[in-house]
Image (tube, rainbow, N blue to C red):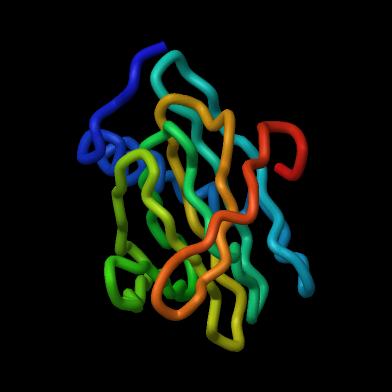
Length: 149
């Protein structure tokens, strides 16, 4: 298994996002985020995530995996912390790439569903969960693949 660099991983997401069938592969649950793993290759895995209004991931990283995502429908807001809280609004076609250990909280703060496409390289094996304390992120624990997702 190899690890794709961050920018090529964003290109992978954008290439796959061009498939119009993705908009119909996952039904929107009105109460909870839902997801499916669409593809696993030697270099990366691809996930489709549906976001009902108000859904959030809570603070987490992707362990030793780099990642990238793009919004296919609706709008998401990414919360990051680098000495200060930063909010980044992402609409249809907007994308984001990040390296291993990058912590964020992604939310659908709108009143309509959203859909996003995510790629991780290498494949996800762990996710660290955090609590935002206003001036720092506090580690809550580590989830292993198959436990929660």
